[in-house]
Length: 144
Image (cartoon, rainbow, N blue to C red; front, side):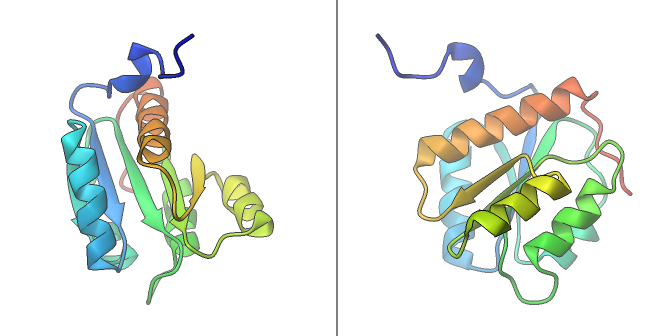
């Protein structure tokens, strides 16, 4: 019996993009390398405010977002993104997570919540699932 995900799980919708938002440059670079190695288009941002000032992307997209950042926290960015129609799927990552934090994130509308350190395949699975969710919703991300 194979434990690898089905082939449909290993493919992103065509034209999809992953936005990585983390104030730690080494984390951003590592996530960018991992995602690009899997064939994803990636754009990286050092803060939630920087990301929120960018124009909307018309296509399947998701966000990998750190919880603890200076300025806007990951939760503040998540709340703003959850208000967009259609909402942009968000994968929250944190090195300081607990059950109440995960519950709060999921209640706001977070697609996935991952505690660091996580396995590469765990993140990749969450990204593929989020991109399919966005693709199923029509693939167009609103600007708020």
